[in-house]
Image (cartoon, rainbow, N blue to C red; front, side, top):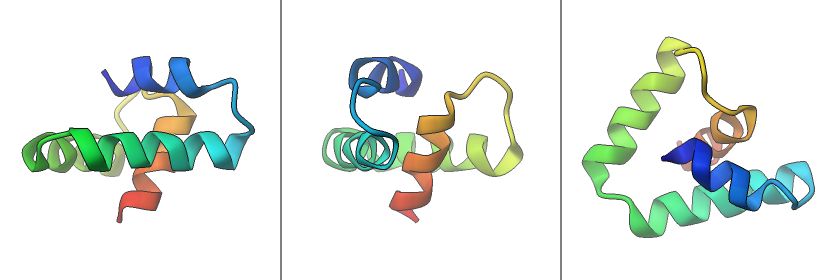
Amino acid sequence: MANDIARNLGHLPGEEAAEAIAGHIGRFWDPRMRTRLHGFVDAGVDGLDPLVVAAVRHLH
């Protein structure tokens, strides 16, 4: 789902896109979903859009 958000906001310049993705995740995702996403990023799970990884850094 995070990759879908990144695709929808990927037209924005890099850092602005990451901030917009983080904002969306912060506003609309359940805390358990955010925790799980943090875990995926921390574990280096393959397949995450680089913008998603950058967005999660904004959420920490």
